[in-house]
Amino acid sequence: MSVNLTINGQPVTVPNGTTILEAAKKVNIHIPTLCENSGLCRRAICRICVVECDGSSKLVAACANNVWEGMSVVTNNSRILDARKTILELLLANHPQSCLSCVRNKKCKLQTLAESFGIRTAPFERDITNCPPTIESETIVRDMGKCVKCASCVEVCQTVQAIGAINTSRRGHKFEIRTPYGQALNESFCAFCGQCAAVCPVGAIYEYDQTAKVWANLNSGHSAIAQVSPALSAALDNEFGLAAGTITAGKMAAAIKLLGFDKVFDLTIAANACNSKLSGELEERVKNGGKLPLVSGCSQGVFRFVENFYPDLIDHLSAVTPRLIFAGKVKDSYAAAKGLNVSNITSVSFVPCLAQKYGAGAADDSAIAASKTDFALTAGELARMINLAGIDIAALPEEPFDTINIEQGSIAKQTQKETVRSFAEARKVMEAIREGKCSAQWVEILSCHNENC
Ligand code: SF4
Ligand code: SF4
Ligand code: FES
Image (tube, rainbow, N blue to C red; front, side, top):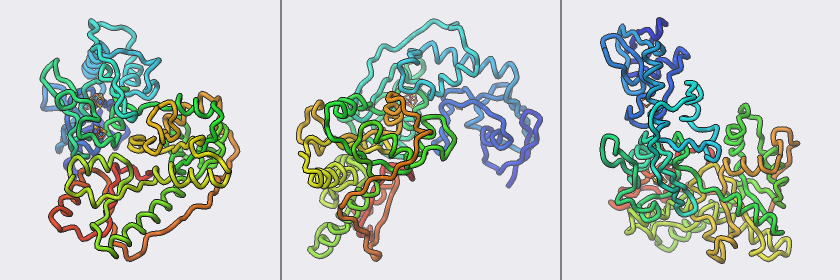
């Protein structure tokens, strides 16, 4: 059923159940948002999206209220703009405003809103939470002094991932986001999927930056090899603010070589080698009556998920991931081909997803950070390295990926494989395995819906 309404006098027709925010988007009317994330539930915490609608004396949140027949909405009169500005000023009074040194500088929703509202003064007394950033397993940094309490991270962790490693706590002005009992994430049930960082609108949760360590290795005369997903080019377009399609796989390969890497491989080498190894493992289990289904994961966080929630099913798990194949097999093959000592080769995976950072370095001989030779860096970290090196990636001529002789394989056609793309979906399959109701031979758990992984 369709609903007819007007927004700022413009007629709009949308399906019943559409929010005011979605209806406004349909006629290119922009309503600012901060806590809204499509796909997550409607929390309406920040109130930055308030609008007037007839029949209500109060301003209502456009992200959380549905349209109705004959409704008339106003999105931009002075009452609304003043209310939004006051909300922003209150948020900024609690925010450190250390934009220059913030990882989200120029990519922060709060900063963009402050700029678009022309906020130049601070009418409210500053009240900043003094809380130093915490580094979690060299994967995620939480800097809760910058948190605007939108609860997007809580929502994604609890609803999409069904993990519940972060919670809301207390009420009113004491409302806060924290882990149960205030424990560190690596002491919690966190599976290090990175989805909380992906939805955080400010610099309160972000990837742990390892670029300094990689630079140190590159400058120490280490031989260095990289693997990169061709799909990372879209994320780099975004990082550099370029039109979609500007950065190609060939430009990425060229830029990574200019950073000092000897070889740049296509990520699919390790992915195919991983599939080949897993297929062999599955065959082995079928032949010898091993645990079925075989459960594999995209990252080490998946192992953590199974250990934490399904310890009774641990024997189903395979230890193989594409990243470990790269850090092991590809590195070994390259060392053998070049007559190099493996411990003198730095291997870096440039990955589209923060989840891959968790456990990178597990293949290192030494746990001493300074001697790390295996890293996983995100598109943001790659962009920072390219910027620091003064490389104009968009202008670079393309270069092909390097090739290496390593066993590649495919999955047998008749294999019954089931792939899930979140931990909430993974839970359903793991429950089915527990109850003996899973008919798949191979269950692949990917920790997010990122199609580029
Ligand atoms: S990394 Fe994933 S599991 Fe851990 S707190 Fe964030 S969303 Fe939850
Ligand atoms: S950490 Fe980020 S996503 Fe979570 S509540 Fe704070 S601002 Fe929102
Ligand atoms: S974006 Fe609507 S209440 Fe936050």
